[in-house]
Length: 225
Image 1: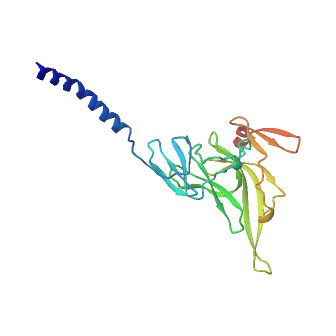
Image 2: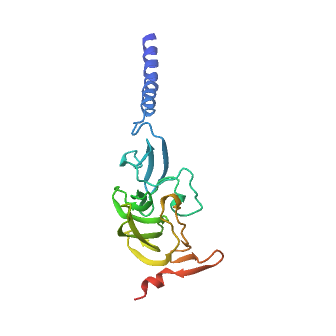
C-alpha cells in the first residue's frame, strides 16, 4: 500500500517537474545581437540599432538585415517639429526609404535615400529633405558645376539650388522654386530650411516671405503638358 502511495506521488510530481523545465527553457531566449548602444522603434517592419557609432537594421525576428554603416542620418538632439532632415531622431524607413548622407570634399553634408536592402536608390544631391509620405518628399536639390581652380589650386564650383518635389524613384516631379542666398562656405554653412510642406497628398503650403504663404495643387501642376 505504501509503495502504491509513493508511486502516486511520483506520478503527480512528474508534470510539475516537466513544467519547470519548460519554463526554464522559455526563459532563455536566443540572443541575436549583443552590446548595442541604442535601439530605435520599428517602422515598416524594421528597427534601427546602433553599435560603436554605426547603425544597422533588424527585422521583427531580431535578424540583422542591414549591416552597420556610418552614413545613416540621425540627430541626438532632433528638432522633431521641423519636418526635415533635422527632425530625424532615429533612422526610420518611410515608403521603403531611409535617409543617408555623404560629406563632400568641402565638408558639406548632402542627403539621399537607401532602400530596405541597404542600396542607395536616391543619390545624395540634396542639402535638406523631408521624409517620404504618400511616395513623395520635398528637398533642396543642389547642382554643382566645376569651374576650375583658383590661384591656390583650390577647386572652384558654381552652385544652383532648387526646392523640388521628388518621388521614391528619385525623379524630380515638380520644381517649387529657386533658392537663393545659400552659403556653401564650410565655416558659414547652415542647413537651409525647407519653405514648403505637404498639407494633403496633393496640396503643399509654401512660405513665400516671413509672413506670407501660398497653397499649390501638385496634381494639377504635374498633369499640365
